[in-house]
Every structure is written in structure tokens, then in C-alpha cells.
Length: 533
Image (cartoon, rainbow, N blue to C red; front, side, top):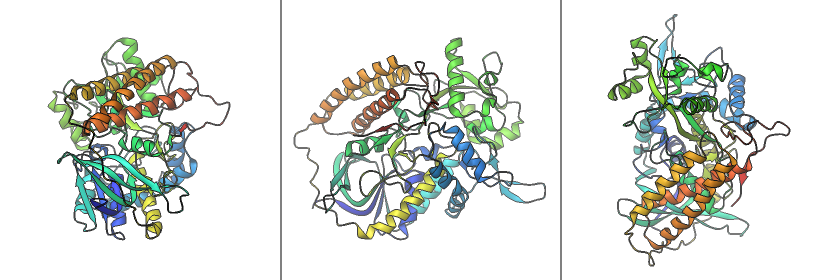
């Protein structure tokens, strides 16, 4: 057997992007597989609190949403992609409701029932559709339930992709993807999956940093896989740090939603004094890059551990109704947010760059697509505006499905694929190398390539990356792969790509802030940073 299984479409990732695409294709294609590195709910979608931005309010407009997105993106958004995405906001929400997602509603004074809309940083209007403060969970569970019930979709948990498999097209004009080698983590063996189309929906890479709001799965796998296969990568210097992650020794990676600030939450110092008015006239509703840098500045300037986010001036009933998840989580750690402020710090949150794609989610390799946070579509530019991320997942899943359905009948059969060769490797007796390198990588990325950068810090980080790459490559060549090793191998590539992009940008723009070039260069049109393998 040249491969263990063969599919029409193989989707790597079980978040909002991957599952939406699977469901859209399932009515027309009979062999779809969705791979999840861990459990189906392990991705970032499940943990998304805020919501999905879309124009529903009569006082709002598509034009306003476009302008807000372009402003947040600091000159690097693709206007055509922004318009494409924003104009599909309402239809995306309507599609989710048909899949069973129940969004929070409210009753107007006239008795009309309509969607309740939050306002978040960077938005000039209320336009964030949500399910209380657990929107991602509602979306994820509904899509999983739909996918599990569909005969044409096979859901495979605990499958970690080792490598993309490529081959020449029949006319040898270009390279095409034909499948993947995957580690079945339960059986601890590598198997081969063939596919006419492969879609990367693997999410972002924020776990390259010591502190992150993301789940453990966000290790940049799709970005590294695509890079090794020969795809261009764009704008990796723009790593978004969410301003407000709960600061508590026992609370790892818990995000305090931007909606808390949207509903009047104020950022204060330990003495109770506000500070955002000194950094931006929009105060707490400034875009995330500005708020995160302001908090970072105050923490370093004053030598404090954290700042505080205070929503306690709102009524207890309002807080418990609008933020039930945050209320319960904080209460577990002895923080009653109806009576006291929440200790918060910035943490790595979202990868604005990624695998370079076009308006149909196509990459540089034939039949290989990238959808969601793994992709660099041009929507976010130098800084993602709040709640545009899930919208991007939905819109580009739809765009990819249209393109795949048009061409899949014309894709030639998958050629014979060589088996994975483990004949020259053994089981590792030095797992400590993996854990040590993982910790070292995330520490120096946080210290040298974080919210504020310098040329010297970037150079130091690159020197350490080069050493780690050699160590990891040697380890990889001698021992059988494990999930931890695969993630580390991918993370060190992501770290290198972030540093290389940051070194090329000789200005401060959006999420990339460097003390050596503190101003934005407006002497010429802004350019994307594009790396070619």
C-alpha cells in the first residue's frame, strides 16, 4: 500500500476555520478528513471569548468597519481583502446560526428581539456578535456536533503532522501537495495520509513566547510545515500581544476579554489612578498594540508586577450576566470582579502574519490552502482589530471551499508516496533536551523579541536560534519523533521567521515597535515583509 488512507480533502486543524471548511465541502465531496493535534476542542477557537465582528446596527456601516480595520492595520492591510471580508460579516453570522450557534440577544424598548452587540478596541461602533463571554466555545461545539453527524467527514484526533508531502505536477511546471506524514500520538507511530487537496488550518504561533493567552496547541505548525515545503511567509514581525491576561501564579493563559474594556472597564495602577489617557485619546478603547505597550511601559517604569482592570463600578447583575466565564474564573482565584479590580499583564495572543495566501486562500504550492490564523491574507496588516479573527476564518473557509469545489474534479490522482522511514532512528533517552530547549526558546523570545525590541536584542535572539536549530536538527535525525519534538522543531523555525522579519523592518509600525527606529516611516508606501525559502 502506498499510503494508509486517501482523501479528497485533508484539513489540518479542527478550529473555526477547519470545521467551517469541512462542513461547506461535505455536501459536495465524499472523502474529507479533519485532523486535530490533540482533542477537537484544543485549538484557539474554543477559547475565544469576545466574539465576531459584523455590521448589524442601523447606525453602523460597512464603510465604517472597513475604515476601523484599515486604521488598526497601520497602513499594511490590503483594502480589497478588508472589503471582501467585512462585506461577508452578516452572511457569516447567519450561516453560523444555521449551524446551531446561539448568540446573545437583547430586547429593545419597543419589544423587538435582536442580537446584542459588544464594542471592543479599535471599533467605532458596537458590532461584535457574541455568546456571553464564551463565543468561541459556542461556535466550536456547534461545528463539532455538525461535523460528527456528517457521513462525509472523518474526524481524527491526536494526529500531529510531521511533514507535507509534495510532488511535481504531471507537466512538471510546478510543485503540488499530495498528502502528509502524520504521527498518530496514541499509537506512537508515523503513518501516511494521501489527499488531492490539503488545507492548513492550524492556528497561530503564540506559544513561541513565554507568556501567552493561547492553548498549548498554538506552536506554529502550519507556518513551519509550509515554509519547509517551499511557501513564502509574510509579516511575522507582527505578533499581537493581548493587553489583559489574568495575572495570577495559578492562572495560566487566561484571557480577560477586550469586551470588559468595551463595557467601561478602566485600566488603573496599583494606587487606583488611570493611565491610558496619557497614551491615546481613545483610552482603554485604543487598538491592542497601543494598550499593550502602555501597560508594558508602566510595569517597567514603576517596577510593578501588573496593572489592574476595574469593572466593579458596574452593577453585580450586569457583570455576572455579561461576563459569566470571567467572573467564575476569577472567583476561583479569590478575585471578585464585582468588588475589586483584576490584576492583568500583556501576553502573546495572535499571529498577524503567516503563510502568504491569495483571496481564495491558495498558497504558493498547488492544491495547498491556508485558512485562519495560519494565513497572511492581508486583512490584519500590522495589527489585527478585535474580533476580526473568527470572521476571517469563516469568510476564507467559504472562499477556499468555492475554489476547491471548482477544481477538485480536475486534480490528477495521487502518485505513489514512499513510506515513512524510521530504520535509522531509535527511541530517545534524553527527553530533557526537548524540554530544556523549549524553555530556553520561549524565554529569550519573550526577553528579546517581545513588545519592545532593539537591533541588539534581535541579534542576540538570532544567535540563540541558530544554536538551537543545530541541536534540534541533530536530535530529530537520531530519534523517533514525538509530539513535543515536532512542536519544538516547528517553534524554532517560527522564532527564526519572526526575528528575520523584525530585522528587515527599519521602522516602528503597528505591533512591531523598536527603540532603534521608534517612528513610522511615512516617506514611502509601506511594504509587507515577505520571506522566500
